[in-house]
Length: 94
Image 1 (tube, rainbow, N blue to C red):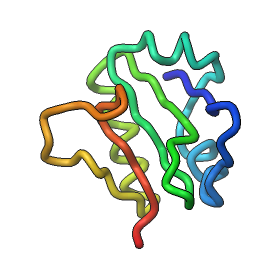
Image 2: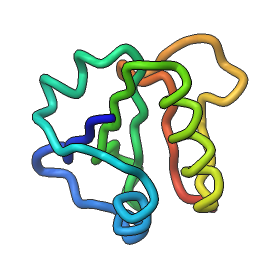
Image 3: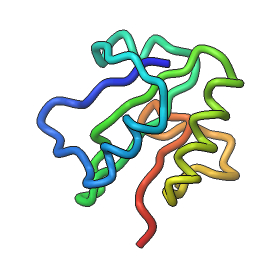
């Protein structure tokens, strides 16, 4: 899986846990967006600051499970559409 930080966006306080729990290769936003499935992560300001790209549905589901285990929630859970080019968007619980 590939990941990138979006320019000008502040990483969330929990970002180090994402990096610690997922095996991610850092790449450019353009390359990450080429992946089949995209996960967005929101910071405390509600902005998507990180993208995670997965080639295979299996990798995508593993990443989703890890993010849920970190206590994050998927805003798009149960929705069959994408938002902002993302198949899932995670944020901290309120």
